[in-house]
Amino acid sequence: MPTLQLRRNDRRRHLVVCGDSPLAFRLVDELINRYDEDVTVILRSKQENYGPRIAQLTRVKVIEATAPDNNAFQQAKLGTARALALLGSDDAGNIHAALLAQDINPDLRLVLRLFNTSLGHRVRTLFTDCAVLSDAAMAAPSFVAASLGREGPTHIRVSGRTLYVVRRDEVEAQRIICGLADTSDQAHPDLLPVDEHSTDLVLAFANGSDVEKAVTPRRRKWLTALRRNLGSVFNRRVGVAALSLFVLLAIGTTMFATFGGYTWWNAIYETALDVAGAAQPLDSLPVINKITQVMVTIVGISIIPIITAVALDAVVSARLAAAAGPKGPFHDHVVVIGLGQVGVRVIAQLHDLGVPVVGIDRNESARGVPLAKRLGIPVVIGDASRDDTLRAAYIGTSRALVTLSSHDVVNLEAALTARAIRHDLTVVLRLFDNDFARLVERRFNINVSRSVSSLAAPAFAAAMVERQVIGTIPVGRRVLLIAEVPVGDGTGLNGMTVRQVEQRCEVRVIGLQRRTEQRLDWQSAADHQLVPRDRLMVVATRSGLGQILASSI
Image (cartoon, rainbow, N blue to C red; front, side):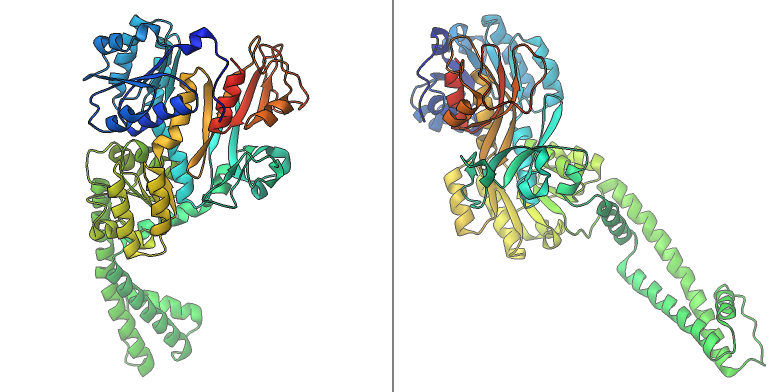
């Protein structure tokens, strides 16, 4: 990929990244190799976490500090830096560090990693130039889509319109904005191919019913819930006993009508009275009627304890459900292992889409456990690599398993244990290393693997070089970016047509805001010549975004 050769002098100022996580490593690698940037990294130790990998990257200056404080920022020469990314796992810690950084350099661009996106929107107003991103929020839709066995549904809100990713044959042609990828080779999808009509995955305008059509119809949701609730209320043995007694009542009614000389209505009336204990013994009755009357009366007496047992079972089940969540059995559900930052978003999105979920975590205080209880999602507390833990989540009747622990080995062990229980189970793994992920998919026949840091790093990198990334579109292990790109005076984009931008860069122009207008034109003319203060809305590959950014500065 061509590097960024044409830069203004202020663009040569270095970037600072705080963190030693997988996301920090991916981000630094992205900034160096995609954007040709000089990067200073503040981390606890070169020997811990991803410190050794970060230290091995070229054009990186590493500063060891226990926390991103004033002393660390002075060593990193933050006063002359262009942007700072704060990637700690503690939202409050990242906000505190951002406030310190702004005091040192008021013109600094800040990129904050925050789990609480609602808080993030409010925090942005505290700073002059700030972007707040959540890697968990970016990665969760990809895991959800993979667990449902399809690319999508990925929804993005852009300029007052909701866009979504869908198969070309599942949407009307007039609602398609652009083609995204040819996924005929699922292992290596072709992103933004030259022949747009060859794409089977497209970006389209959404309407209110698209989510429901993309997943299981919602009308099945209440049937599943009814079946689950009935299963939790009625004990199997009690149910068999009750069914047997009702069969005997049906036989008794038939005998009254067939051999006893009653009409069917009178036979039903006589049976009901006998069940209620109102049978009248008469010597003049035929023998068949006497036998039938005795049988129906005994059945009626037996029904009373059955009804009592059902009522008690229902009360006990309801109290247990209130204390520890709903009970199984479960069918056609998704089992999610790891209810941390990513897991909590995955279970919430699956629940919103009407897909039954069972969670597993070894920690009762995991971030997603309180949410699961509020949503009525059952949670199994235990080691997900153990056979009995997975069976408690009814892995044998589930539709998919999603492993979201932060440890690759734990995720792989849980996946292999689940496959030993059920060999055809759809498995979605969270893995950091892409090469390892490919080997796992091939050697162990695992369906899908995803890396949170790989999905999120491109958006963080684009935000650091001062371009607004509206959203991300995961396609397999790769990602497309939706970004807003301004046309500046004397830049490479000035004077180019929309068609030329698409031909020279790996991008699709999906919208154009002309300098004289406030609205975004979703049907921009291919021969429109760009002028300063025009703004493009593009879908780009990671390299394509680098190319168009090189032309816009």
